[in-house]
Amino acid sequence: MKKTKTIILAAGKGTRMHSDVPKVLHRICGRSLLDHVITANQDAGIKDVAVIVGYQADAVRTTLPETVTAFVQKEQLGTGHAVMQALPFLEGFDGNVLILMGDAPLVRPQTLQGLIEAHEKSGFAATVLTACFDDPTGYGRIVKNGEALEKIVEQKDATPEEQQITEINSGMYCFDAAALKKALAEIKPQNVQGEYYLTDSIEILQKAGEKVGSYPTADPGDIAAVNSNIQLAQTAKIMQRRINEKLMDSGVVMIDPERTYLSAQTTIGRDTVVYPGVITEGIVQIGANCVVGHDSRIVDSIIADGVDIQISTILNSDVDSGTHVGPYAYLRPDSHIGKNVKVGDFVEVKNSTMKDGAKASHLTYIGDAEVGKNVNLGCGTVFVNYDGTHKFRTVVGDNCFIGCNSNLVSPVTVADGAYVAAGSTITKDVPGEALAIARARQVNKEGYTKKMPQLKDKKKGTK
Ligand code: UD1
Ligand code: CA
Image 1 (tube, rainbow, N blue to C red):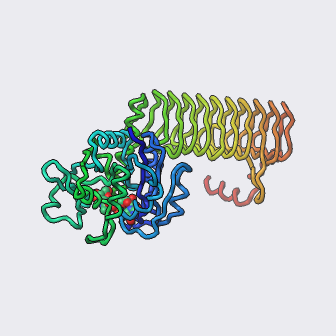
Image 2: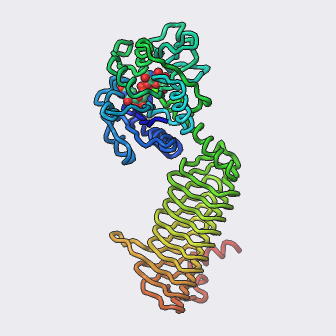
Image 3: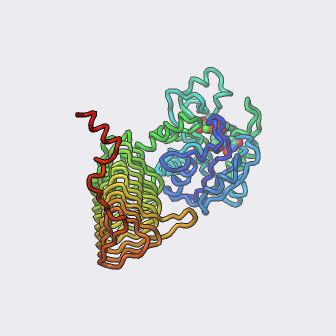
C-alpha cells in the first residue's frame, strides 16, 4: 500500500445552520463534527491529516489535535479552491490523497480503508465514494457513460435528466497526489455558483485520458452530511445507534437504546444496566454490574464496578465500587467518592473526598472537605465552606458521627471518633472521641401558654 495523506474541508460557514458557531464545530455524541472525521482517520491509521479552515478559522484551529496541520482559506471560493490551499502539504508527495468533508461525521475507518483499497486495486487516478439515495436532493450526481464515470454535476447545475440520477457524490475521494495537483490547476469557476468545484476534477482527469471511477459504500449511513439542524439531529441518531449497539454487543444492558445518549468516548463494563434518559459527555468510564438509573448525567468521570446511580448528576469526579448515589445527588467537579459510600437523596458534594463506608443519606452539602471512613453525616448537615470572600476546608476524621442539622463552619477539624450533637454549629476544632454540643440549651417554661391572653380567649371559644 502507498502512503496516504488526508485533507479535510472545514472552511465553510454553514449558512443553513442559522448559527454563530462554525458548522464543523457543532457537536454530536459529545464530539464536534470535525473531530469525528479526524478520529476516523486516526482509527484508520492515517497519520498525516490537514484541515482547511476559513470561517472563524481561529475557533476551529484551537480544537485541532497537535498532529493536525491547518491551512487557511481566506475566502470560501469553493471546495476545489479549499483543496488548493493545502498544496504545500502535498509538495513532493506522490501517494494517495483522501479528501473528506468536515461536515460528514459518520464516515467510518473501515470505509476509508475500503476506499483506499479499491482505489489502489483499480489503478484509478481518482476514486469517488458514492451511495444511492432515494432522495438525492442537494447532492452532486454521479454521471456515468455505461459503467464508466464521466463527471459529477452539482444539483444547481444539473439538467432535469441528471437530477433523476440517484447515485450521489459523498464529497469524499481518494486521488493520486499527482493527478489531484494536475486537476486543481485546471479547475475554473464556471458554474451557477461561480465557485471552484472540486467535483470538476473528475471530468478534467477523465477528459485528459486518466482513469477515474466510483466506489459505492456498503453503508449509505456513512455519507450523510450536516447542512441543517435537522440533519444534525439525524446524524446524531445514527451515530448514537452505533455507539449503543457496540456497547450492547459487549454486554451492556440498555432498557431503551433509542433514549440513551452516550458520548463516543464512553466505556461501560458488562452487565451494567443503563436506564432511559441517561446522558454521558466527554470521557466517561463506567464499570461492570452498575445500575445507571434514568435521567442521570455523567460528564468526564470514572465510575467503578457495582455502583448504583439514581437520577443524579456527576461531573468530573470518581466513584469507587459498591457505592450508592442518589436519587437526586449532585457530585460537582473534583469529588472522590470511596467504596461502599452512600451519597443519598438531595446531597451535593463539591471538591471533596468521602472515604470508604462514609454516609450522607439525605439533604446534605459537603464542600471543600475530607470526610473520613465510616463517617455518618446526619440529615441536613452543611459544610459552611464560604465566608463570602474565601473558601476554606473542613476535615472530618474516621468514624465520626455528625448529628442532624449541624453546620461545620470551615476551617474546622472534627477528629477521629468524635460526635457532634444534632443542631450544632461547630466553629472550633473537636478533639477525637469528644462529644461537641454547640446549640442553645433548651428551657421549658411551665404553664406559659395558659397565661397568654390571646390563647385564653381562643380556648374559651372552643368550649
Ligand atoms: C459538496 C459537493 C457535492 C457533494 C456534497 C456531499 C462540491 C462542489 N460539491 O456539496 O457534490 O454531494 O458536498 O456532502 O464539492 N468548504 C470549504 N471551502 C469552501 C467551500 C466548502 O472548506 O470554499 C467545506 C465546507 O466547510 C464543508 C465542505 O467543504 O465542510 C462541503 O461544503 P458544502 O458547501 O457543504 O458543499 P455541498 O454544497 O454540500
Ligand atoms: Ca455539505
